[in-house]
Length: 136
Image (cartoon, rainbow, N blue to C red; front, side):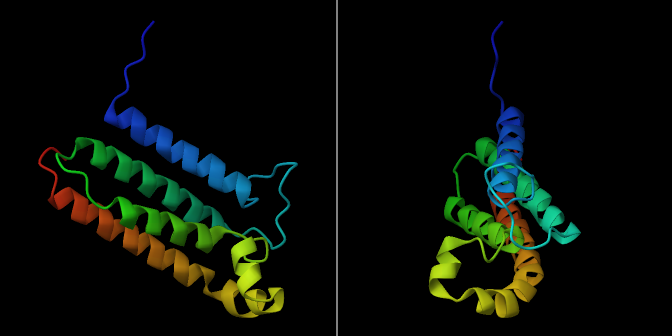
């Protein structure tokens, strides 16, 4: 039995992979290794799902395009999505730059704004990529 990779399979695999990996390392998907230090909210799950869906759509469109564009922009969208639903106190980079109290009082309330900006950014990247794709 042979398995043929298609653009759709690559996109779905990317989306599922992003959802599982990011959901695990941010504690949105409960696991015995990672403990989330802030409450899980519906918005966190929405931004996780949106980030995974946009990553899947990007990989699907990218595989159809004659010339791949926007890889760096997609990485920026993934990073923005991760900041939107990740636990700010658990993020070692943010914790090294700021204190935990600053993260909870200043950064945590901005996470929904970062999530909306990340989704808008990803929509723009997908629209940009689609305009340059002959087969999309």
